[in-house]
Image (cartoon, rainbow over all chains, first blue to last red; front, side):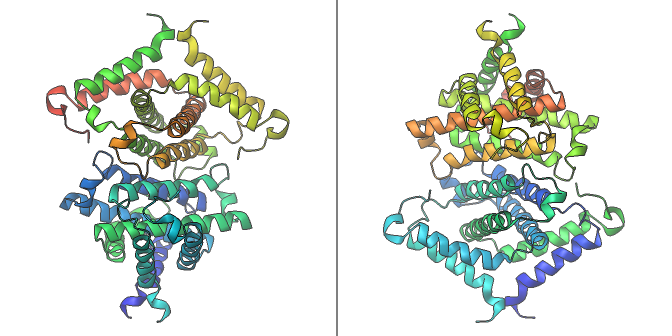
Length: 114
Length: 114
Length: 114
Length: 114
């Protein structure tokens, strides 16, 4: 299996992990949206008292913690997409195209979104 | 380019999108952790008054909105990992292994995590 | 001091607590909005795998944890309002009036908001 | 009724508002913890691309938006406490005392919490 197949493999592993533990009963889209937000806020917590500029250079502890939280977010996101039958990569590609229309280059250069 | 290369390609597109708009100045890990949480909460909002059981079957509007929010979460997550130089897939594989130790099969079957 | 003065007294205590620790330097509105969201997500975490109906009757542990998180949310909210000079009760009264217009009785009865 | 009674009055108004619309059916602690987090993230969104220092001086639009989101957070927090029978002010006073033990003056001066 090549490096390129990594995401598909991970999706399968996430689902196997949950099913082996009989966790489908807990994994409604509603509950998963909660779990995902909880993990996002744990990432947020790492940076709550850190200034923007300082967050550009992470300590080892911050990097490790960030990697774990980023991982948790992805794992719940993949499980959410499994339970809702959403093709995450296709959705992301489509959203990026919508964003390109919403934020045309000439109007968005150096101006924060929204 | 084969289907398996999709994530790598998406990562490149996300970065090109941000750099073309000169958005690196806004994309500190701190700010991105905020944007990511905002998107997670927009996914949460879709389900706030929906019962767990009912969230298993989405209306077309709920599915489209969910796909867009899931996409936004992934896009910011990829950008966060770019700015922190975290290998997201490697982190997720590692976290899944840690979770396997934290939630051994015989103790976790049918019991919600945490 | 009568019971009715409790909120004013609490506001003063929250501010004294922060100032005595020289925490004003951390308490920008941006940072406080992050801390507040982190606490909200900790409340969310208590209920992530609990069904709606079951959340109506809390265990002692859930009640204690909920009280602590609700308290943390209020404490950061009061501090946010101090740093932005927002009169929280006045804002809440005004918002309740706006909500009354947005959700007129005859259209909103038994229909979830938004 | 004196100014000091404002919070008690607001609590009654929040409950009357919800009951008149027959919204108790939606207001499980689980669902309210979601709604509260959604509102917290809407406050967060206001500041996601604003630097800490710049968030200390709000534009009129930012101030108005912040006041509305702060209000929404309080309204859902009060409703959460009603549905869980938590005395919010008592919980906040207790938490502030716990925090005083957790962050003793001599160790916490000028050092961010956590």
